[in-house]
Amino acid sequence: MAPLLLRGLRTIDAVSEWSGKAFSWLIVPLMGALVFEVIARYFFHAPTIWAYDMSYMLYSAIFLLGAAYTLRRGEHVRTDFIYRLLPPRGQGIVDAVLYILFLLPILAWLTIVSAERAYHAWLIGARAMASLWQPPIYPFRALLPLGFALLLLQAIAEAARSLRTAVTGRHP
Image (cartoon, rainbow, N blue to C red; front, side):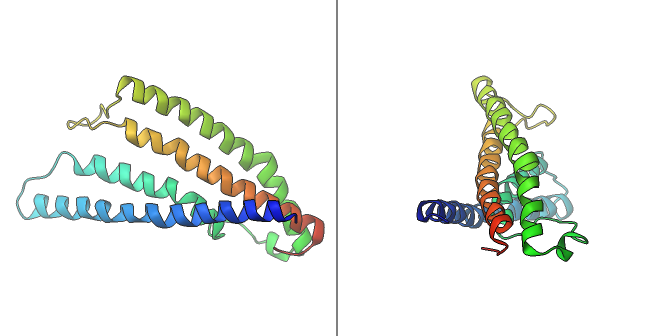
């Protein structure tokens, strides 16, 4: 691979690694909210109106913002009962086709659509209307295009690696 392309792939990998590790710290406030809710509900008989909203927003953020890190680590679910039997070149072809024809277009579309929705949510100051607390939801909506964009970048890197494997027959 060309040195510039390798440097680009390493940069994308570094961003995925860094962002995955950084966003994993969201587990701390998630656990804090859940522990607070359990203590308030069962020991003081005073459930909160905010813990459910905080937990689904934080969990969703952890899940989405960690997706690029998970792809970088090769930890996404794969049904490889046939895939594992293929030689490296065959695996590269399968991966490249799936990345290029399916994953990349879908992620590009999700990034664009979620960015438009996030922009609209910021304009109107969107709030979670299904909750008594009605927390602002526009910051959460802004995380969606960020998570999809990070995943799209990592998918581009993985597609490039798959193409290399399809051509050379060697895993990078």
